[in-house]
Image 1 (tube, rainbow, N blue to C red):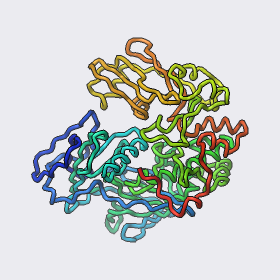
Image 2: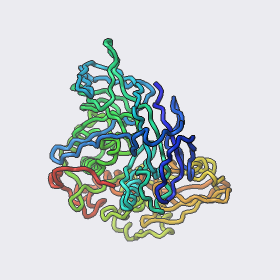
Image 3: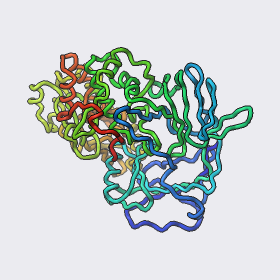
Length: 543
């Protein structure tokens, strides 16, 4: 079935007084300001068309979606999307792993089978749906989007964070925009149809236009790809419309069962018991801190690396289950709230502060520190001087040094760098010079400048460095030219470097460190607390 038809308008929106709404149906202009990709592509039955007068369609920021429920700290249950942005391309196949499944339609009707196909159908909208918003982004991470949303909120807007393809921040078309946040781009859409689902039966089709539930006593078999969102899941489930005009398959899963599908895929099931316990505490803490991450789409978390990898909980072995059970309902807290419990694969010998990885204020429990014994801390005193980064990268003896990406070398050529930057810097030309402009206390690169043959240069900051050059495992590196149009990056670590190093935790567990000592090492000043001490309800942290 074709996608719903809609009208589009994009234009740069510089900080200025709100513009009056157009009252005519003049043809629309399409622009991609500042080298940013257009957020919506015309495809499969979509075509640009003249906007009707504003009175012909109710205006909204996005498709209306109910917020997910608040999570109860006593019996925490979270909504996790096994699949999102489902759109008309092929039917949705739902298969029971054993026995029957029951689909409960929006009107309460129940349909039982062992497998079913849901087809797509375009439902006319009367009146049409008009979506109009300002958009900031794309951002390299949720954390950087949240920082921009917080600044926009302080200026008087009511923004939301969304993830259509990359992280973005949306606000009303007339919301005040600080000059240091902009420019934003304006998006306008008029939808005359919406894709809904349809169950086809011998007695006739059944339209399924609203949220529905799926009961599967024997489990649902779902293939979401390698690892994330694949395997057999116990449910129950919901099929929900999202804020983008698509649909999501969401599992309603108790928090402790969710961890069974996360811990072995994040740190590895063969890790020492204390390292598994640390990962269980952090995965639980991270989930509760990030309950608002996908609120705009009506659920809490995704099942991919944009959240925590979540796959078949049945794969959790005895050691993983013991680590989860042994820390049941325990989280790391700071001032009575779950901390920003970020973690990564390996830090290369030195932890990063929060502000070295993302835009935002420093956090007292995410501090840069040398990840080694006292002698190494004394040798490489922080803040690390630029001249000391190379010697640190050639030194051994740090915690977790046996990780395969604890040390690494990458060579990037001008052609691939130009291709990686063509959207954000189309006039750059061929890269001719790569320079580190600024480093943080841990030695990580905060600002990387690429100067091109076009006479322009682009400066990448923080998480935008790795987003642009995915070949670089971390921002802890030194760079040097190794020939015309070629640069060698010599670095350490894999990931953002803030919080717990999984390789470090595994090493420290083997050295006999306790759970509390490892957590205090990577998150100084935090407390291990039961959920019951945090209050009756948890809603995540608002940006």
